[in-house]
Image 1 (cartoon, rainbow, N blue to C red):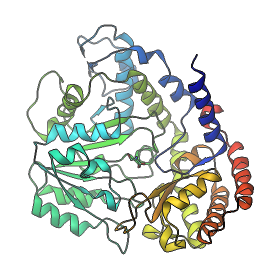
Image 2 (image 1 turned 180 degrees about the horizontal axis):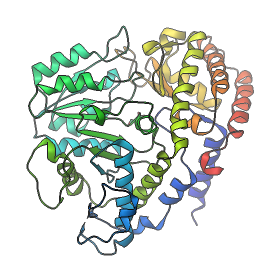
Image 3 (image 1 turned 45 degrees about the vertical axis):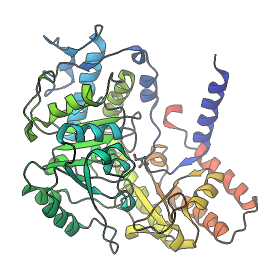
Image 4 (image 1 turned 60 degrees about the vertical axis):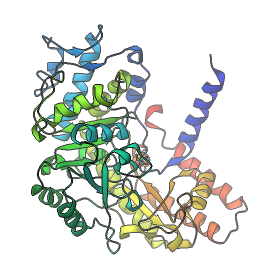
Length: 446
Ligand code: DSN
């Protein structure tokens, strides 16, 4: 009926099929996830929550009738089961006592945690956006930064790793109500045990991990899980390495109780404080079609193939990082321990990240310009680019393909450095990228 949008969807499908997605926060989902998102659950309002009884066992409990639910509308026979399934699967995947599957996004998830635990003016210790943190971790332009007092830590410029001494010193000085770990442009593995130790001496300090980038690696068993190290809360998006629909998720440790009754403000009660903060605190009706798609993604992440997938993401990232280094690219942190690579393009080829991002776009390789720690370049034309392997690994690319991608990236970097774009080499590379991409269809098209 709407030809314009239909044509744009077709064009986007073609763009994705014929190109290679290197943005580390993107992925390509299965047909099952897409179908659930496009289902009639989009028609349903389900404000409130299902009953949580029985969720500590297994999926079979979703068919058990419960004596009460916490919904504000009728007709929840199927939505309750969908949400209970999603919660049960998320809990198992991430070793959590409870899961809230309703946040519409990662930003909503983070804001709901702040709102659950903090009073206006309370202090949060998190990583600076300019060092690789996230907007919602206290960037001045955000609403939460106007409500709460964010204090930032950074990375050690020599190693690219977290500056743990800085974290410890600031935790002692500011006695934050939340210590927040989790990043958007970080290629090391945080030492969760060390940070949990730092928080131990601070009364009522909530340990929060925003694992949006690495949730799929955690689910696949190739990255430590902060909830195994004494963290109280883990937030994540569901669409990055976890390969689900766009959306948010909050996993908690503690006691689960009736969300209609306000519990005491204790760390133990954080699951229910957060449920109440998501709805009605910061959101209205949940997106049940998206929750159904989250449940499908969690099911997929529980399968043995997902462990293999997570392993291959990291393996491909290491091979790509090494191949780039051999070709003169200077990497922040000198490599990667996860799915993500941050390249200092100015130090490597005297080319800014935006120029390089646009040049690669023309040959069908998509990544994003990104600031490097302590960047002196303007925000929109930063020194670096950020790339990663979750999406290309979903399409089945292997180590040999990573070396080929590094070759293409080197050729384009040199063309940019010498300012000699004439379109001829680019045209040839565009065809080579297209050929590799079409040989590895999107999972939803298989
Ligand atoms: N926008 C996401 C990313 O690209 O890392 C973070 O939310």
